[in-house]
Length: 337
Image (cartoon, rainbow, N blue to C red; front, top):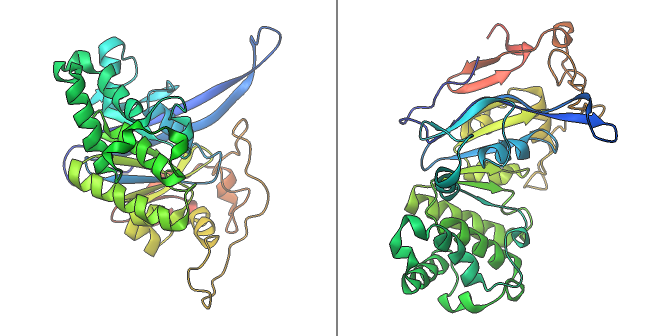
């Protein structure tokens, strides 16, 4: 069972039954296929305009591959992704360029998206220049410079800083520049891949507040890929938890943090440091290593590490079922819920 659409109108982005399997090859010409790495396996969710969806899980759970599929950097093996009801894969030429303008990304390390030899004003203007053919107004240099100044002010920087190079900024300022560059094309969706994890704690709070302010102003949607559960709790309206390529729990963020259901999510949450030193909590220790996505376990993929494993867990894959309004869990503990 897949989670139904949340209330509030049609989704901006719809991910339907997406799978991504990478072939593992061998030989001089790499023509012999040994198997397939199941990076993403039947993932479905929706994001609405002005909302934030948090995507969490351990390293290797499929978060990055899912975001790359949404950014149209990877073709899914099965399933489809739709933006405003239109499939995104298979787009070419102007249609693909238009999609690139609508869906942008901000990465953990701003150095990966900033040219060290280019002034930041030019970096921010790149999107406007690339899309100038679709809007003659952006062919005007004065209009572009004005838009760059607007963007710098929007992200909390000074217009004159457009003439500086990336190395002249602090880490937090570089992340603001990367955000300004992403906003230049007025996107409908921004993929935030660990956007604050490399920043100091005080700067993180400023960046998260900035992202929320921009969302309120522009009605932009976010896909937040993060390890930091505190960031997800503060930023996300809905949260999806992944394990070994599959969604194992999803719910409105407030409901999830108040009532965690899946054993893996409980273990994930129990590993978070308590904000109050005098308060104690029980930490759930998971035994063993995460299985290989090349040969995932039969039945429930978490059963090899689950503290509450039952015989049926290794025999039958649990369905994603609704255990309370809007709260979905894939676990045999809730078969009779």
